[in-house]
Image (cartoon, rainbow, N blue to C red):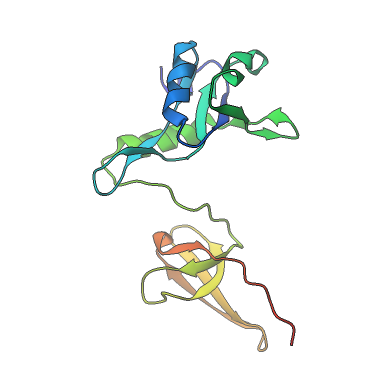
Length: 170
């Protein structure tokens, strides 16, 4: 059965570090649909989870106790203490990426408005504000004293979230 065909919603289960595979096997052993997206390290080594500390599970959430009793399971990802449904379409997209011949791996989550650091390319070492992500990441650097900005398009894999700097009052 494909991820999209599951009769129940999908949920993310938080698990202890390095327990993803054993939890996924236990979920399957209890008869629940599960999804553990993995990728192979660039050196061709071990398979690692794309989302460390998470396993996805499809179930009638009123019957979640068998999942919560699996060794290594912490809890369900929740909003206001209610387990949050994960979009099947998003999981199908992740599955398609994994099944492709493309080199994949985790990437920091970036949102429009985030302060980012450029790791590669001609702007390497610069920081700015991410103002769009598609089709390329659009980075804005501002000169507040002039109340002016300049924007550049960069490859999305060149940027990562910037570490927060504490400002020092003069």
